Length: 116
Image 1: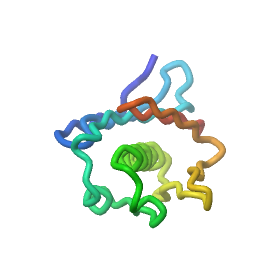
Image 2: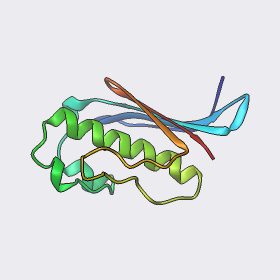
Image 3: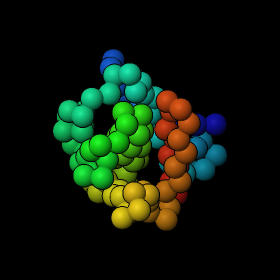
């Protein structure tokens, strides 16, 4: 079903980052991030080279943790396409995703699919 291209394991906030492609459709890439909001802190934004938006600075930990995990997954899948841009946030705080990127957030797992 999925063909893994790389997997990173660590302790702390992000447990697993796995990226690859759908075996039957290699043009469809995926990236899965398993994370633990209990290990979140604001310094993680700097260590993962992702900007914490001003609008999120006062948000609850759960919201900031999900935001960071999604952007980290996006960074993984976009790097597979040679892109270094991390999707931003609109004025209404909704994510600004490329039209070819589909995002699903489920508790402590982030799944991104793209058609590159």
